[in-house]
Image (cartoon, rainbow over all chains, first blue to last red; front, side, top):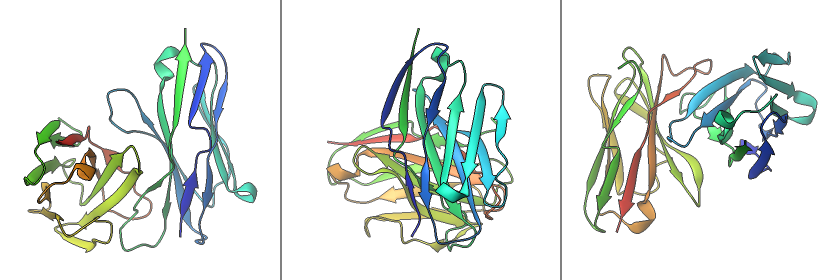
Length: 117
Length: 115
């Protein structure tokens, strides 16, 4: 069965610091997809990125970057020069290529990031 | 609007009452998902629709929960004889086809409080 672990339940940083959110996953499938979502205080889950298991290339989008390493089953998320607006709960999620439930997402427990001015 | 919408945004009910939660997916999205977010259980999958049919209902926590989708669009999640442990935020998501390459887009959720 699939599983996603986000060991950091809460992180607090001061604005402009870099911060990395960890995500470790378990799956028996060779084809799978990894996601990060942001949940600001308003509550809506906002999609950030999707990665497939065959693409280990790291990705950068502005201040956000993602490090996917199959060898350690990790998909970590780094925010560079954090800002107060980055304060939110961040979820890592996994979907497997074949499942009766479409691409049902299995979520980690989330990491609450607090960025202080 | 262009996103997933859910109603009501908040619902307070008494234990034992039935409730209906509604989800309007993004226009043209054939796949629709319900999830539940609670303090004790985190984010958990409930049910998935491909068109109007639900291939997998195994995520529904009990037979008090049911869902339907009509016209390949709006979906309703019904909870009968609500219990306090049903208190949670119910999130709906939709995606274009429901395949493994799809991205799910979420609505704002319905916060259900059972007194």
